[in-house]
Length: 144
Image: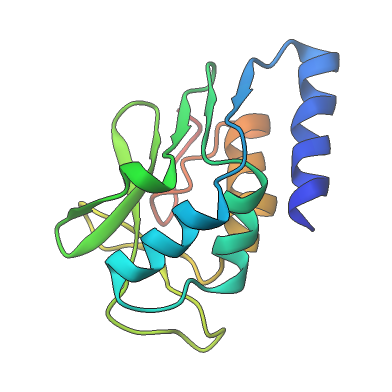
């Protein structure tokens, strides 16, 4: 799923079920370049595409906050970029690129690997949370 289709999927849910989503404006090329310089390496393309489409977003219920690229912060050796249900933080593992040539996305408290790619995060994990309240930050958990 392309990032534009992700936005359309959330817009559709907003229209049909009243989901409240605040999409932030796109990150500027300068902001993305500054982030890459701060991290000391180029951003994986899917990461750049996502923040280039919207520099973070907030879903009111069920709660999800994807941080603006300037708000990313190191936590437990990972780069925190998203928080589910005001509690469960996810981060990029910047120590290495995985087999998909991207950063693993991990639960910053437990180290559980949520997914290998940013596209899987936006097209699968976020929608599983929104539609089913599936606790994607854990190996298996009943809906929150």
